[in-house]
Figure 1 (tube, rainbow, N blue to C red):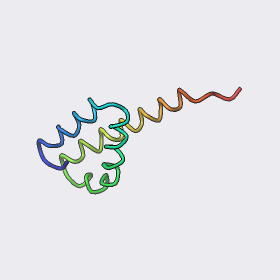
Figure 2 (cartoon, rainbow, N blue to C red; figure 1 turned 180 degrees about the vertical axis):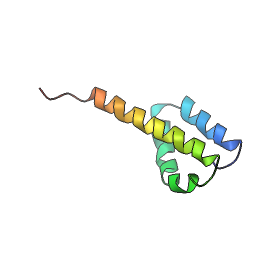
Figure 3 (cartoon, rainbow, N blue to C red; figure 1 turned 90 degrees about the vertical axis):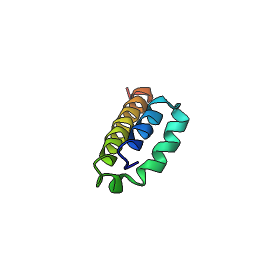
Length: 68
């Protein structure tokens, strides 16, 4: 994931997989986020993961029933 070109593969997989696959992949990547932040190309994955997590949280909030 810290490779100059492989990070694009990881980003594309996250972009094109279904929700279940994305959750599995994200759970594996999240463990390595701090280490990835140290690498120039790893930072691209960190940014993508943070974007996907934020989008997922917004989607969950939108689906939750709002208190009256």
